[in-house]
Amino acid sequence: MAGTFKKIRRRLWLILNICVVLWVLLGVYCMQVPPYEAWPAAFVAFSLPGALTLNFLFLLYWILRRSWFFILPLLVVILGWNYYARLVPVHISDKEIPEGAKTLQVLSYNTHLFNVYGGKGEEGRNGSSEEMIDWIATHPADVYCLQEFYTNRKSDTYNTVNRIGTRYDKYKVFSVSQAGPRNGEGGIAIFSKYPIVAHGDIRFHETSHNRVAWADLDVGGDTIRVYASHLQSMSIKPEDIENTYSSIGNQAEMEKEGRNVARRLRSGFVARGHQVELLLEHIQQSPYPVIVCGDFNDIPFSYTYNELAKELNNAFVQAGSGIGATYNGPLPFLRIDNQFYSDRLQAYAFETHYEMGLSDHFPISGKYVIEPKPELE
Image 1 (cartoon, rainbow, N blue to C red):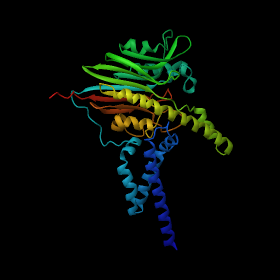
Image 2 (image 1 turned 90 degrees about the vertical axis):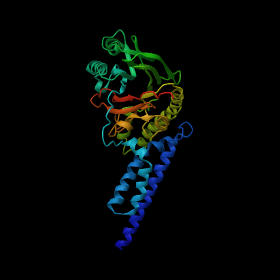
Image 3 (image 1 turned 60 degrees about the vertical axis):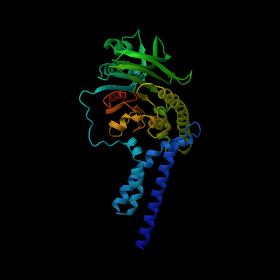
Image 4 (image 1 turned 120 degrees about the vertical axis):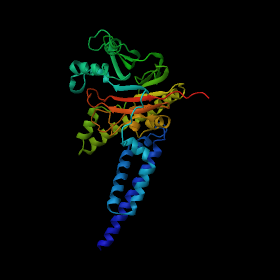
């Protein structure tokens, strides 16, 4: 009797493992599907981290059971290693920058308008804004790409163009997406210690505040194009998450809050699907190596991220470690801020700055080596 029960349990776990493998395959396929063509695919792709985690747990389970069934989840880990690396990259040792190499360090940060309208703990209009602005202005990065940037030339605290750029002799690009009260302006800003030889922006829709600013930098004779991106927000507010949690146990409220969150997610998936294609079209026309950074508002298992990863390397995957969560809000473990880069660049270091937690995002910085131009034969 015990032996029969053991066989049934073994078969049951194998069937569940096969279901998880099919889930992984479906999730990988759904990342290729534009959300504006089939939005349910975006939700399946969004669930892929859960499938990858369960598959790894099955691998451990079969190994501990000393069962040959461990080969099934092991094959998924081996064949899908690139997707596991998106989840938690593994690096045996730190990369050492070659002696004499030309480097470029880039900081990317969604500043939440420097909390001008109130920030975490409603302290935004006082000390937290000052601390955030000073932290950016004195950061050793060569380039700052700032989303939800805010400046007001008539304010001592919020004259950020002067406090970050002019005071420290930096070149700047500021793409204004919205005008606020009392001479305030919001948008995307790029500050650089290297000369900006050309610049522009990509506007997704005339009524949208989301956009991309770009600048061509003369880095000691090499031209590098840097993009500062802010794609469509998930539009999920902290109170939406809190309401969902608090509705647990009340079926009617749970369904209502669940539909609300799902509707917002669907809208964001569809909008970002269009936006990333416009961004990629512009990137593909660049005559120079590119660094594409910013707040993409999508996790690494999304159409948005996947389309960028097809063309570019991801700095966190190549040089980062841990989970690398960048969203500083009620949803944990979300990495929605990224830096991508093209050929002739190599990422040697990547850091998520958890010491600066005054925005709803954490800053990220990457250090790159600019490889010499290939000699003409």
